[in-house]
Image (cartoon, rainbow, N blue to C red; front, side, top):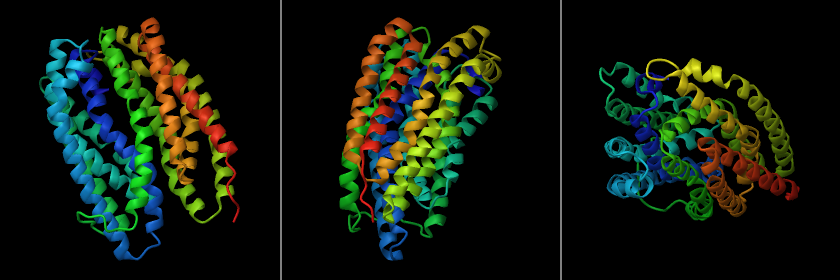
Length: 406
């Protein structure tokens, strides 16, 4: 709302949306992989002696900092080439702003990885305050943008992003230490017995997650090629979708994995499978209801949240048209969240990776077919096709799995 009020649909928002998506895709991908494969391991460490648990957490912290630092340097140094390849459709002013924003998003890569590890530690203890703290960067950006005297550049967005991610990582690190009852001071090494299992699972999952992680960049690349501030329009619609997904489905999905992992570790896999399938059907129905309500409420919601200052009624109409097509993904996204957690709790990472690669193939093909015809609406429709295919694959995998009884 604050960005819409001060910037509207403009080159600055194009630059911010482009940089945010492309600079964060690899850190967010790694956090996604670690969240899936790490939480079951952390759940098991709760039953181990303090010394063994502390050793694993300290080594995990050290390697996450090292990897985050490498990512930060890589993003900053490679960004001119990223702009030459993926930002060809952007205006020269937008490209210059994007390059300036890397001063915030390069260190944000390190902070994202540290925050992701801390969030996984909290979720392993079934504490979900990290969901609330996801809002910290947005709140800081809000404050910075509103307090800025001049908004003809990306300075407020840059500083709000950098300070917001820093505060989020510090708070999560402190809360994770309280949950684990250890500071987990960084200690390089692979002495913990959990590393072989974790590295093997992460390697398999990384293949699928890297494929899926290209969904955001390919959308930005497609939108940039369409011109006419399509990146900004798509970004506003995506923000509203993220609000629905975050408040509704993401919270349930995050809560499900430690619960299902604990059920599976106690040998009650049949019960865990039955519970997950029931939850999935319920979430599918909830997503369908949300889609119907959202289609009708979209113009009112966009106008209420964004239409002020530099954001005009014409901008409301453009964003509403894109948002409505994006809502079609909700039922399948809601339903598949639980099934993803079920397969993760069963350690079926190879199958999950294969499904992720297939999903990306569907998304890339649908973008190429639909975006030239329908514009930004086609990009959203392609995402709905991707999640529909994902739900079918996961549902078949869950129904055909026959866990051994204990």
